[in-house]
Length: 490
Ligand SMILES: Nc1nc2c(ncn2[C@@H]2O[C@H](COP(=O)(O)OP(=O)(O)OP(=O)(O)O)[C@@H](O)[C@H]2O)c(=O)[nH]1
Ligand SMILES: [Mg+2]
Image 1 (cartoon, rainbow, N blue to C red):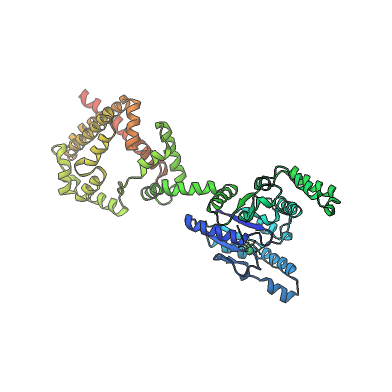
Image 2: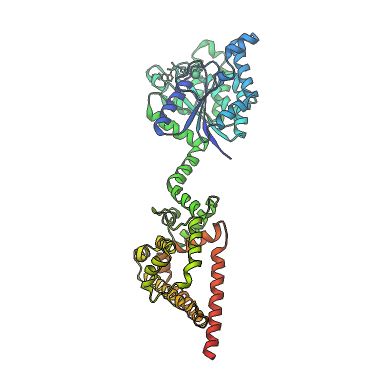
């Protein structure tokens, strides 16, 4: 399911929501984060940011006031009800911007943020469509000098936290206007709220409010007992404040995790994924490939990502033949193999070049001109035993090709060739068995041979090719042994 992450920017009228949306837009542009801005405030005629979707395309407060004779607040609620009823309009806008981070600027009227209210319903619909939001609730620090107002805005902050049932970050906006000298407490007190009942004590100093001492204390205790509200100060000009908030929001809505994951995949795995698709088919199961590589990496005691790079991030094209190339090689082999005779291993490539150029080119792409690429890899392992094994394997295979080229046209010679080939394969197997674990691991770290075989066998469009090949080889070795025993008896 496609997911969208974003911030739902809420708070009382004038608390700085639109300014904050604009501040985040600027930062995201600088950070090169793909985002879209959505204005859900039907009274926001001018926004300090570019809007990608705007509720005013659907309805405006003036429309509602004119047509239904409603006052500004009633009209706003009507607009939000219209939006709720037409949530698919908004979802369509979001779906058209796949994977973009959402910045949603909301209206300020507190009554919209009740439980089961207009915003609550809209949020649930968005959640069902795969939108993961974090509410950012702005509170104007201009309320700090008046304890009664401040207690009331803290209450409304708490109320939206409880009603909306979603992660919420509380911001004390316009922190640059906070003037400690004029206030009974410092900024830390207003943001961390260690004991809000102290503000209630200040209220008691006002004879008018002292009459409501019990009520005020009860409200203070509700806030205190909930222990949910604290604020992050924000001065919109401060990039440091914005950066801190961006990190907090990303953590709260889960974007931090996915963002890391996407970046990891894009940066660390992108090239390898392309190569896997090219070599094993576009529908190759990338997760299964990662599991195989992780498994092999664990056996080698190296990080998965390192092994992934070695196995798949070859800067060159790697050994891939198009279907047409493979077909051409098969046809060429079918036509010319009978005339093919090598006197020694050194003749193999030159003779192929003359008689079967397509096959020659394919082979050179795999091993390099004159086996140079093969030899480079072998020398790069940095392990004498492993290098010795691989060189011996190459020579044994080439010698076998020489023998086969000479025997293939003579049935009697072919009978003798079978036990010879069988012995060669058995020797290769025992040389492999004799190789120490350390050498095998060093070899695998450089060549990814074992890993590549597993990837091909388990993930290529036609599965089990390597397993089938091993079975055939085992059968061939057994047959060779049988034939060899018979020849000896004769
Ligand atoms: N000094 C200062 N002023 C700010 C800050 N943030 C916003 N303002 C100002 O506060 C006023 C209100 O800001 P808006 O962004 O329009 O607030 P709003 O919450 O979107 O308002 P409504 O859409 O009417 O609900 C504007 O004049 C802003 O310039 C800030 O961090 N510091
Ligand atoms: Mg606004």
